[in-house]
Image (cartoon, rainbow, N blue to C red):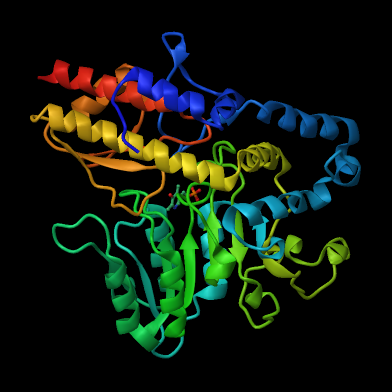
Length: 424
Ligand SMILES: *Cc1c(COP(=O)(O)O)cnc(C)c1O
């Protein structure tokens, strides 16, 4: 499709957009009485208007029933996590047995690695992406130390070739093959948080399995953003957070996926809790941990219903819009953003920014700035753009298909031009 950098063209795309009504389901922070251009859904998604009522329902049931809300509430808290299974399964491409909402992302990564990072003999190496999100780096480093190993000898990082932005697929697969029977675990982001690169999860999983390794993904930037088929790809485990593309609120409940092939494995190590036992045993308070079937076995604590209430409506909204329709709009929206950025840098030769996100991408574009990048960012912010700045010199922008419009993208371009003009 040929794009145009005009208001009329952007409005026409919005008019034709089947998902345009979903924008009204969210609260936008305001700037001079207008919606801000909110391009940070990759960090914290906007609040769904239905969140308040969902939260109020649980507060009311708590007021009305006290402890009996576990069984008497409209959505009984005892089995609250079960409400999510079908919907989570749809978002990540799994069966309901394989997913459960629980805990926080980083703590879940630790719990999953307790089960799935079992270094033995020469099979101790852990392969990850270079420039992984710091929390993931700390998690991997401390897991390795927990097993009495040294991170420097054990963690292998993947990097782009000199002068390139993305990590090539063939380089990832070659590294997996090279590590061979020394490789215990591949643990990579589904989408790199910094560059926005989407990794070839299916091929990585196949290559990892071919050398006898376990393969897990951190889906923080992939969940609700790119097409996932975890079950069919054969991925062993994955974890995500719900407050980025899934709009479930700051620090809201995270989630995990574990392939059903591990469901019956009673030899897996785990750090268990009472919510990981079968529902019928949960209040028996008996000695000796017996795992529930599927991903539920990794649950530790009873459901944090207040944060899950917002997650519930956010997830319902996401599926009402539809995974495939959202991805289709996402591709168009991000391509339009790329077009606008290219148009600006073509017309204003002095412009000092480049998009470093490779072709394999989701919503996010990362813009590498040189020289006065921080000033440009500050100017944009003053004019109602919410983007984010990553040191030393990258601006990340992510138009989110469920609530951003093509007009947002056009207006964003106008603001960049104006800011560049002022910075001259
Ligand atoms: C956002 C993000 C996190 C945040 O972890 P929390 O435990 O939710 O605070 C971790 N890893 C990646 C890759 C992220 O993008």
